[in-house]
Length: 284
Ligand SMILES: NC(=O)c1ccc[n+]([C@@H]2O[C@H](COP(=O)([O-])OP(=O)(O)OC[C@H]3O[C@@H](n4cnc5c(N)ncnc54)[C@H](O)[C@@H]3O)[C@@H](O)[C@H]2O)c1
Image (tube, rainbow, N blue to C red):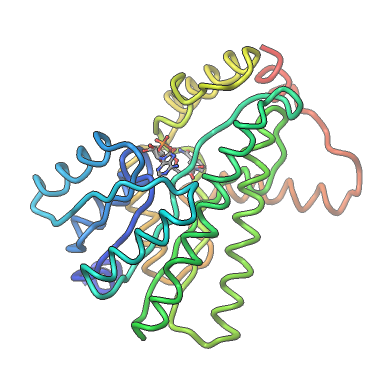
């Protein structure tokens, strides 16, 4: 039996932001592996769509509406999941938004939303679930969504990039905390390269400055034309989590190039440089 089916079949999975994109893809994969999937999502219709897809395919799923930017909602989610199911095998802190705009042009509200969803949502997901996981005494898995953007700098995607560097740091420290406390909780840092999702759709840009429009559109087109197939990417991701890997890359070659660039940047101790490709993307 494949490792992912072996460790995950029969368990419960909570996946935040599972109404679309990577969260939905991971949810479908978990459903196909025989997990009971809790689709934790802010958008009711999107959550129900993922639940329907899993159930139609013969799996088990339920929706819980949650806004991960509110710590008390993650407490409620954790309490509800443990009250209903008694245990949790897999937590995927996936919900996230892209934000485009220069640091000084973004509204305070958009800055706060980006930090609250992408970073605080992951922190409070961990804070709400881990004590219950410890109490259950069972082997569990936590996967946090970082990005290749967690190893790079990108002007006008600053808010997003800040959160992904921070989530990467959180996952590394959390992994070590599990080691210190000798807990049976595996931690993975998921690094998608580029998977075809809705993250650069125009509707996601509400509240961004007007200058963000062409940057968002170019990113959307790049993802549409060159992004990896979503379900294949999510199959690779779930397999990596089940293998207890800390690093889980959807596109390892892309990750390797970006990480190599980061190491070279640190070693050179030169200021950041702007490539022609990035200048074209940002300048419109
Ligand atoms: N798609 C990629 O190539 C890529 C690359 C690197 C990292 N990521 C990361 O993967 C994760 C998923 O991104 P995606 O591309 O699937 O995006 P997506 O926009 O397709 O899906 C994100 C989902 O999160 C939900 N969501 C947003 N705010 C929420 C909130 N406050 N509470 C609960 N749910 C909320 C949305 O409704 C949506 O269903 C994000 O953390 C993103 O940063 C994606």
